[in-house]
Length: 256
Length: 256
Image 1 (tube, rainbow over the protein chains, first blue to last red):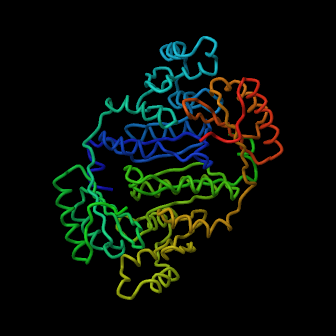
Image 2 (image 1 turned 60 degrees about the horizontal axis):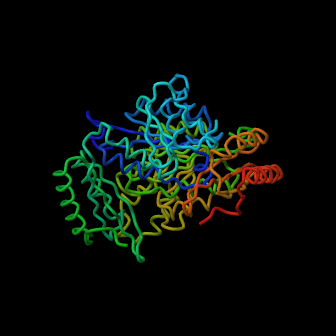
Image 3 (image 1 turned 45 degrees about the vertical axis):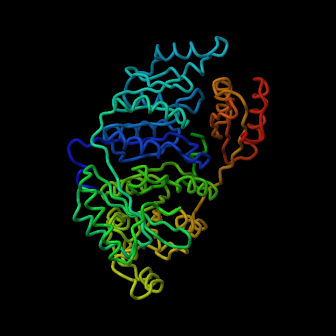
């Protein structure tokens, strides 16, 4: 944990992925990486993610733990028209409010579907906790919603991304985290000691080490992260010197 | 939640992904989908997954919550030689035992590295909680370990998979969950009501609905999961009839 990560003015978030299909291995989640990168750009630190099954008690418990702990919670999944889509009910229970048919959401759905296509299953997608505000869905109309610090979005990646693009401007972010990546054909175990010393000298940065294997050779990508660009540049210069001292060459990017 | 999912003889698991690189969006996690599918094949139900940062208090808390709640916990990440690799220390704290240098792990590392390459950073990879047993690493030697119901594995996908392949035979699994997938060019909202009724008639199965968009058309993949192949076949036949009744055709597989 970097020193500035727990300081005043840092805005934090959690992602809650709701869906049996991720836990069964049927679907590879594609939303976490997008939200992680996008929140970071917005100056919001993603600090935890969870995947839970389509089970009411588990969703309610996770929502209540996460919303108490982090500044924002973003959920994905479970807001469609079928019986396994129970997110709206669960969020209402978590907040201890009634589930209502949101008039604006109902109007959107009735305007979108032909009169013979609107049915009770589709109208369930207009249900929100009382007091929620809608999150627009430019892809397929049925909206997400926000209540308190919880943003409820679709699980289909194209829809989730469109929803997030609509809300990100309204997030209260801190200073965005910048990063510098320095890859080299050097083993983690060779640089580990000096890297730990570098981290100790730059406590306001977060220095990570990620091994890679390319063309028969082991290498390591060293990633420096922090909000202070001056410190980042200074630490990166020291790191490059260190790599050369250990007999390797810092690379501009990870080899393909 | 399907009825048989909470019954006697069901073996459950959680995955705990440890690593800032996933939360920062730098790295797309590749381990969860593999573990979800592999555990399912072994008759173990993955019921929850979490991603936490490289922060001791968070790792310790997550390990203790998950190991109390589920039959097995599988962690990935944080067992390398660098300063940000703190998983072994955290697991020892979670179990309230000492961190020791595991003699067998140390012997493996000393046999693998040339004498001038073995150093304190690399030897840290031989540290385990007292009482742990090793998990073999056929890729890069440094082992994972098991303590209690917690299996600690590497984060690099190729290494994690090799480690898991070595332990999966020893897992005590329940009946494996089988699945039948029936895709069709039918909207979720069109089939939702009847699908809910089908789920109600087959409470021992878990019926999921996953929309797709191909070649300009919306469709839905309907997935039936359960341990009873007879019930699965019966429900799948009813589902196909239902799809035809609603004017669509069940497909053999999701269109490319």
